[in-house]
Length: 331
Picture 1 (cartoon, rainbow, N blue to C red):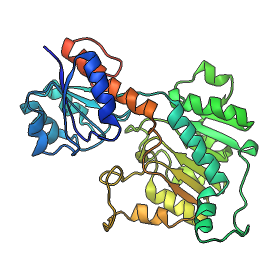
Picture 2 (cartoon, rainbow, N blue to C red):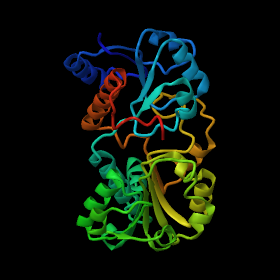
Picture 3 (tube, rainbow, N blue to C red):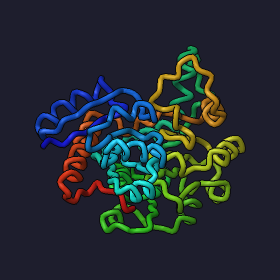
Picture 4 (cartoon, rainbow, N blue to C red):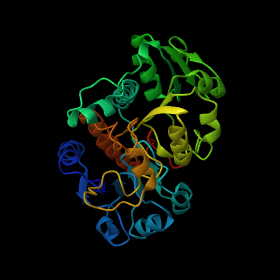
């Protein structure tokens, strides 16, 4: 009997074609909607073994609703899974999985944000749209003369360090678990040292209870004046109010942010013409030294294909009772 997966928030312009091919190859049946899951449209998943979704509300009531409909697994199409109530999933006996994808896409996007921030590219482009081609206020810094601190040396963090090693900049790294390959190109230091000595700090770690607001007012105060902050990981790693205060004071000189602390209901939606009740977003957008991208660091064809493939692999493994590296139920 074929495994059946219902996809929420399926994008017809990229994911669906990939899903059609991979599902056919693996003999997996699927249904889909472009909508986010709600209590009302959860009924669409009745009779399916698993549901797949991008980050959205997967709190206890939603999990209970899917469980009551016979759904046995939640397969996230994202590396992050902090939007899923894992305790409730375990209580219900539901499996939860995430996905992975080649690290190059996010790593190179992070480096792009570093370069753009250091060279004031966002400000230069905006002034160019107004036909202001003067040089005043556009002088930047060369990354080759900077010390870059990488927090988190998993697959993406390692790739950032590897690629940055060709720029000639000094590289510092911090992680609870040190990697021998990283030691060949970067120096592991305590977090306090990394904060104090880095000209650029980039985040590449998962969001957990322990590192919630890892970069807060106290952390910003320990950094070099004018430091550049890059975040392509999770918005919850940065205290938004503290970042805004540090940007206003000049303690933080620039920021390149692909994620925000309060991005739910914002990114991946078309909000054109809406009044958006998000003062954090409004304040950051008003700053010429801040570059905002809408959680798209992962968004390459290679990564999307890997994410869809990971969902199908996990759903099949859960149905067969086989282990899968994507199983995060007990984390």
